[in-house]
Image (cartoon, rainbow, N blue to C red):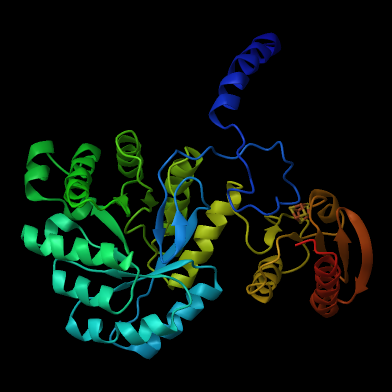
Length: 404
Ligand code: SF4
C-alpha cells in the first residue's frame, strides 16, 4: 500500500495551497453571507491587487466586488426594445450593461436609453471617435474603445479629455481576432504576447494624456491563450481587468468554456468584472456569470439549486421538476440552498446540507430541511405546490429574522 507516501505528499502540498488561496475579508468582497454549506474556513481566491477605477460611481478593482456585465443584442436604434432588454438584464443581476453604438442613428437614441437605465451603461464604439463623444454627451459613463484604432492623436485626445471631464471609464478591449497587422506579423499570430503588446500600446495613449480611469480586457476564443494573456498583463499593469472568453459558443458549449476559462482566471485572482459571452439570450449570460462567481465562493445572489443526476432509483421526472423549481425561483435574490432529489430513500440524506429540499417518490414525496423530514406529501401532483408553500414560509421566516 502506498498510504505513507500519500500522506507525505499531502503534507507537502498543503502549506503551499494555503499560501496561494489565503481567505480574504468576505465583507470587502461583497459577500454578505456565505453559502450555508460553506464554512468560513473554506478558501476563496485572493484577488490580484489592482488600483480602483470608477464606472458610473461604482468602484471597480481588487478592493471591490467582482461585477457582472452583459451586452444587449437588440438593435440599439430601437430604444424601446433596448431599454426593455436592459431591464431584463438588470433583473437577472447584471450590474453594467454594454450596448453597441454602430452609427449616428444609434447615438441619437442614447439619451433616451441612458435616462431609463438603472445601472451604468457602456457604449461599444469601433473606430469612430464622434460616436464616442456623442455617447459621453448622452451621459454614458463607460466607453469600450481602443484609442489606437480611432485615428489621429487629436481624435484620441478629444475622446480622452471628454471622458475625463465626464468622469467616464474606458475599457481597452483587445480581441485576439482583431489584432493589429504588425503585431500578428511580429508574433506570428494572435499570441498572448501580441495581445498584451496591443493592450499596452492603447494604455500608453491614455496614460500619456493623464487618464487612468481605465480597465483592460484581453479576449480570445481560446481558453489557454486567454489565460496566458491575462497572466502576462497582470504582471505588467495594476489596472482592473474585465475578463471573458469571446465567441465562446452556444449555451452549453459557451457556458462550459467560459466556466473553465473564467473559473481559472478568477481562482488565480484575475478579474474585476466579467462577461460570459454566449450565442443565446444575454439574460443567460448573466445567470451563467453569477453561477461562476457563486461556484468559487466569490459572490452570492439568489438560491443555489442543487439536483441529483438521477439514477436507476429515480421514480419521477426529475429534470422537469428541477427546471420548474429553477423557473419559479428565477426572481428570488435570497441566498440559500434548495435541493431537488430523485428518490425518497437517499434524497434527504444526500442533500443534507440544503436549507430546504424535496425528494420525489412513486406515489409520494418528502419535503426536508438539512436532512430532517418536514413532511410527507401524498400524490405526485401535490408535491411541487406543497413544496412551494413550504419554501415561501421558509423565506418569510428567514426574512423576518433578517437572515438573508
Ligand atoms: S438521490 Fe436517489 S435518485 Fe438521485 S442519484 Fe441519489 S439515489 Fe439516485
